[in-house]
Length: 171
Image (tube, rainbow, N blue to C red; front, side):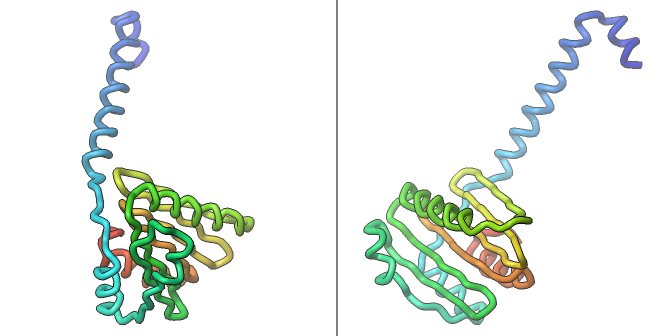
């Protein structure tokens, strides 16, 4: 069938096929960008409230990390023995991106064989996750905030509940 179209249309068939491919690619790109809305950065106060609502205890560790970054506005952490969760609120997006990259570099230094990796980037959202030897690590940046979390692979659903509650992961 394809050969009949090529014979009938000649070189025009290749232009037609090329045009169809370009249109389909454009449609895919439009759908991808339309369906990836910017996420709203949470604050330390919002995250601490959601942690309490989910039954987690948290600690304000701003003073501990303030010496490492003058751009830090707030930091909280929660560790219930299953999920180790850090939330950092910085004064600008660039500082958050630098912290995200630093955390990612630290994870990559500790890599083992058999690592699975995932990455997502759109609008003001960046996510990097790895899973290796039963451990799950994720770093998420939304605007001027960064989450650094780790848990055993069997507790990723608990981590997912936290991320969903603060609006950093879809349900």
